[in-house]
Amino acid sequence: MWQGADVWVHSLLCGVACVAVSLMGARCLSSAPGSSIASRGLAGRLGSGFTMGSGIISVELLLMGYAGVPFSRGLALAALFVPVALMSLSQRVLRRRRKHGQSRLPTGRVIKRDSDRNPRGWNITAWVVATLLAGYVLMLALVTVSYGASFPDAHNIWLLKARAFFVDSGFDGDYFRSWPDCHDRRSYPPGVSLFATWIYLLIGDADSQAVKLLWIGFLLATAGWVRDSVRRWSTRSLALVAGVLTLLSPMGMVLSMWGAADLALAAYGMAAVALTLDWVARRHPRGIPWQVGIFLGFAALTKGEGAVMLVSVPCSMLLAAWVMARRAATASRDEPRPRQLLPLARQIGVACAAPMALVASWHAFLAHRAVVLVPVMPGTSERSGRLSQRLAVIADAAIEQFFLPSWMYVWPLSLAACCCLLVLPRYRRQLSAGWLPLVCFWVVAAQLGAYAMVYLLFRGDLVYLLETTAGRIPFHVWPIALCGLMLALSGPRDAGDKPGALAPDHDTRSDTRSDSNAQRT
Image (cartoon, rainbow, N blue to C red; front, side, top):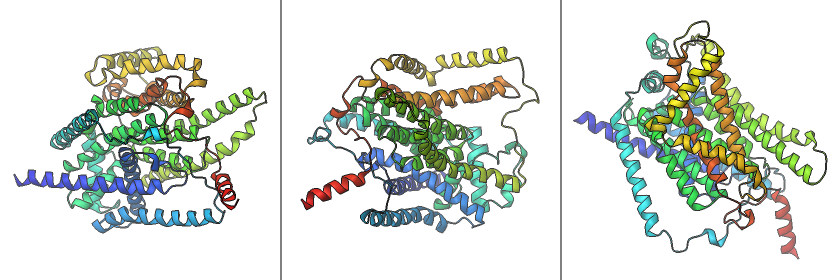
């Protein structure tokens, strides 16, 4: 009885810690140059703040582990408050430099219309929907905590590693070194494990059942990013439908109960794509690629599939910039100049260099500690079957997903997204979202193409690999595909008449100068 009571007390403390992480991440993200988080609602701020805060804490513990600093509750509290202090100090310095005209980092502007405000507040329908969703989230949280760490991957990979970090107070303890061979997954990216370790440090116990509440936060954050991205360039109704579909996704519910890191990867990937859409719509402001690189680094520290996002998302950004520049040159009857894209490519490359170095540091640390990379799946030295046979096996596994209860409505919506992609060029010039649906579909195609190549080149039992991963990896891109579909379904609109539409980005220093000149006049 008392053990069960301790679980619920720890779960309550875990929920409070998640709220604190959301507030910390929202503060850090709002202090970043070029950020537009101030224009989002409460749900958007908390969702984006949780993804940012969880990644920041994981990176902090990773660096402390490299430095040999022992993990403690004081270190966990410092990891929560130090980023806020640093971002507040940097924001004050940037504000002072901008005042003297020394800062080159523009800040995005958001045009708010009077029609975007609802002076009457929520109507009864909104209250009913919010109450039902709150009840669903509470029920899912209770089921997730009660389910425990019974999923093999959650226990053998992420939570067992978090327990090792907690018991050893770092990376160099005996528990991590003497890991059983049957559970040897030490080479996996440590992002989710470090975040769970931070929760263990706060509650003072390695309670793998209470820490499952973290995955509810990742599910809510993913739904918040999808809803916010659709709302910025589409109607309020479509944004609500997109957020609810993400929240009520059966596979999202299953992943949250399992405690799988695929849910965290989907949240980080959706955050990076949402900022990419903001970057494309605002005509390439300088501050956003750094935020995209940060979230991609968090994704790469979460799972190995995040390294694919570290390549697919920047390539989609450059492709969108090149296509838009080519269309603009065609409209003005000028020759497109590839040199105009070199500054953007350099900026994106520099922004993604730090996350790549961070991921490489983990592998260098494992090599220094002589940790052997154990294969993920049992296999042989040669690929089984010919290429045509492997393609048939992959196609059979993909068709089987149509009839699974957890993916019953995902594939029809994906088919509708493909249809929208075919009709999209006809009214692209009049579409309120412009090129944004195409950017989403490019990222989805790149991710799924990379996964298909891994399946084709995998040396081992392909059937076993598909049975254990084919049901989870589509959720990595499901929120992105849903966001692109809703943007494509928004229909021909005039972006200038849309409430809350983003103004074309330009250097706001010229706006400041013009405003100051007008005041002088």
